[in-house]
Length: 404
Ligand SMILES: [Zn+2]
Image 1 (cartoon, rainbow, N blue to C red):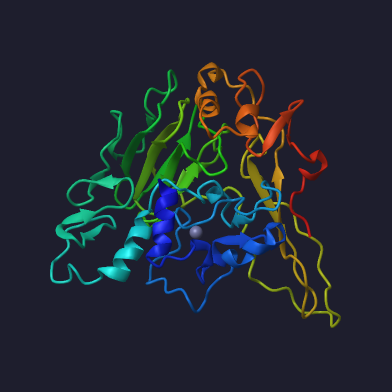
Image 2: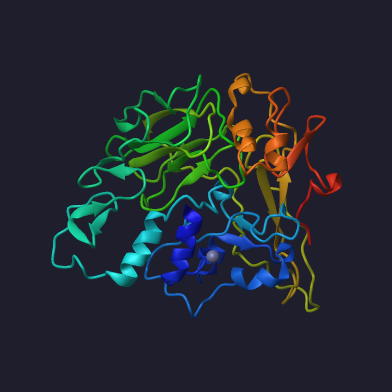
């Protein structure tokens, strides 16, 4: 579905999201791994793209996925600066809220200009029918004041939080688990002046794909219109998250499979906003220029924490500074980490997802590799070899798939 919308997006004048002039604030492009004839698709187009004042959206249907046009189909060509977004990029389900907003801003900007908006939480008046609101993903009701209506499940709601933990979970969690094509959303409201704290608890498992197809999404930034962090695969996010404002949204979406799903506890908190586990943002502080000869690099700094706990699902990074006026080469490098396979899941017998996928047309070698339930599991493109996650082609290359 989204593939068609991606192409319609082009026809309406949308560029690839990663070509926006501000893209390098959100992603790093790994040119060395891009098939040479596709490099131009990754270039930033400073003069040609008018963003119309709409923020960068890592959940845009126009955004490339992690391994788009990769020479070996597994090395990442697009690395998100915030590692929690790595499996968000590349979705092809549908136009995102900001994709639609961009098209509306370009073609129907003034349609509802004379009317006073009633839309809340970042919604805006539908240009073709100004009395209606177009709501950000996860929101609904006449004014976007409620959670979005659920699909094929009884779930979701508005939760007024207190300082006591409350729990919420995906449909039929954990057994028999969620089914294909369900959607739920929860609108979480902290007490006045406080924030929303979210912690994943108990079992966690979703169909494992390099771009999440079945997922739980946390919208915890101060922009509820933008796409949040999407989590899938086997390893539970271990950190606790704290929203930037008094409002947060949790979205559950399944498109393809049956699996355990997620459970979280939520409460109102005074804690500081907390999102990313392993920041991969390059420090902008330049090292003092001390040397005249070019290409004098300082030593690499420490590796950041791995963003996930097992299965090769995570990513880590380190940076170094240039000690001379000019340096050639990378200031930042990324690596996979925590390559020990994720533990055998006690609910694995009902992980029907991969079997189902393999019976269809989209079965890949990776799907087969993770379709057995009795062995520890790895995230694509890795496969389990004696409890360690390795890529099938070159085991030695796994530790550092990106070096200078
Ligand atoms: Zn395209």
